[in-house]
Length: 444
Image (tube, rainbow, N blue to C red; front, side):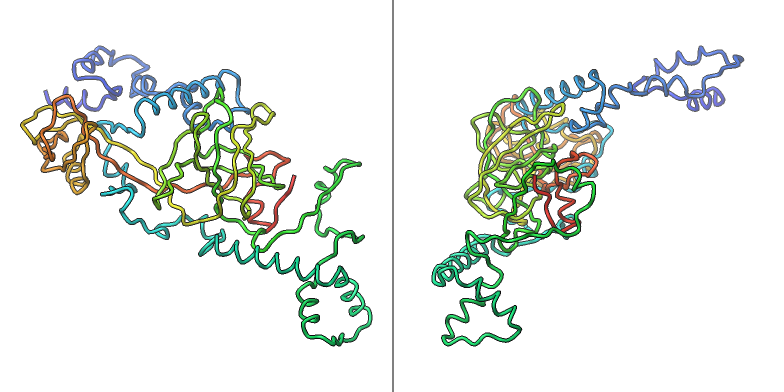
């Protein structure tokens, strides 16, 4: 008996097979040359190549795969969007998973609007290479006021400031001004060029391949940058969907942004724009047409107001997916992703209920015991204790609960935008990673 037990336990069993089904494996001939040492289990448990390719492939790589794999990926994206619309933010825990490990980075909030969240807590490494504004609105007001003073000073000089500067440089001696205020204005206007002047611009460190990419009769536009506009930060844009696309757009998909006169590619994060709250709810998919939302992406600092156009590349052609305007640059804007774990009351007695199918491990129940519970019928409650060894828990609510109600546990995690990988960007687009390395922007 002991030998037979050892033989059965050593034989590889396919996933999901019961003891009765595994007993049929004893029918394998032990004297056969090709004895199965787990090959059958591996073959039955192996996923198909199409499903592996679909799960491990991003929509941005769909242009590099076959048409069949592309259709499978698009169909999977559509099913995900439909499921999200039917059950928004709901996540299911599998029986073989430990919720305390899977959702270790999530936290519970007593109030989404009033609970405090430190904006500098556990920032990713990518935030170390971007510019952080203490107050973007104050910086913009100071920059715009300086530009207005510059224009007034140029108008007061009647366009003669540039000639005076050139004359001083050629003479090789310090200029003596009769009026001190005039000297301060010329120092303030140093490096400026009056309108209508003929100048020559020399570009340095231009790579040969970039120079060859220019057409023979093409025109190059030179635009002056305001202070801080050569730096990279987290930009926030208020957008609206132009039209319902055939392929749903997911957060962190690679999109092309046309902001003013600059163009770059980025992986935006969509969210709701809450005016009376410091936290903004993350949106997994681009909202439907007619709704307004916010998009956060790494990009060059741009002052408001500035129009924004968002494109997506499909089969080599760009499709307009959203339009709007710039909100500002703020690396401390908190975008929070919400997930909802659901369970169902199996035994109800007034305000008490035994809830199952939310967890499958009593340790998970103890881990999430401090978190508050809600129901789809508007009740609030808490976890009292774990019951049994299969994740069942005893809960107490603020009012009698119905048998057909659904118990929910909301968890939150902060979401950050991502840099675009250079392999995913087009050859004719400037990526934000290129901006960070060269401290410049490739303008198209």
